[in-house]
Image (cartoon, rainbow, N blue to C red; front, side):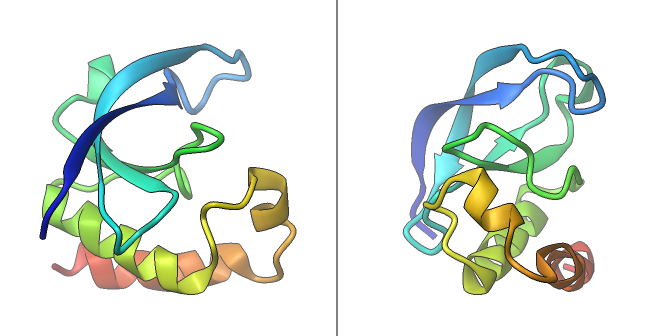
Length: 110
């Protein structure tokens, strides 16, 4: 898999209501447009995440032990919807969370 290293913006604490963004190094691939795979920020640096590049939000607020799992998840999520859309359009789609849960189960098993 060919990846490109880029800089994206992500929330520093997905559990906080406070909005604070930071630049991080991430990887993209044509197989999952609009999404980026990256390590966690500061306190969770050993985990891997998938982020919606336009909004900077973590996808489904989950993490993975291995980069490969995050890549499998990003590829599966790309089959569900167009992640180049804005976050509001994505969240308005019916059953998106349920569909992403199924993709997570497959990725976590890798």
